[in-house]
Image (cartoon, rainbow, N blue to C red; front, side, top):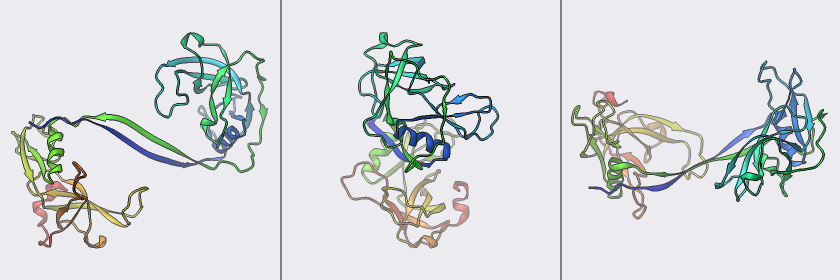
Length: 318
């Protein structure tokens, strides 16, 4: 029986967005150690600011400056900070209503322990030593015993020299993936440059990659079936936008490929043929990556030179 595999897996990508006038002013203000909010039609000051009134949905642009001091409205202790969080030592997540604001801002509070944190405590912003125009320009909050800031915020133009117009926010998910018995067998076969699926004992369909159960009948699958290596392009798309860190020239073709003997199409890149000559029914074969790279699917598929498959042979897999 194939050993069940387990491995750490990281999904990470940068999310790039442009900023409108309100968010641009807010983030540029943080770079300049200035906290801006926006005043709604009913007089509420929202911090962080938004571009549209959450009650009326009307556009709002009246920027005001609030104090860097405030009051904790609620909190939760974080005993084990994770990668990318504001502080490396245990801290409290707090909602802080800054003086002059009508809403609370979520951030970290640097405190020696949970007994030092309470709802209603006074805090102030600790600014980062180097500021770039991001929420991380607020390094954290810290306890504060000084005078409160003004209740009435000052009107602000929102104009700064060299405003921040866009941000890149990295999204990352770290977890441990356990593929289970069926997919462990599938990955072990890939290491030997083979592709295996599992046959349903009821409908007799062969699913690749296997999931350990038939998605149609809902019964467990165990019978392994080797499929391919050749297959048929059932449908495809032409990719014209180059992905970051992907060393493939555009345009290129990504296709669903029904391997011979399989009842489910899997996806793969098509190469070895001009992109505008790829078509439904094209017969293809795998081209594997260099040895020593572990359990990896084929690098791409290329035409076999066989006549195109008849549509009736793959129409159920389109």
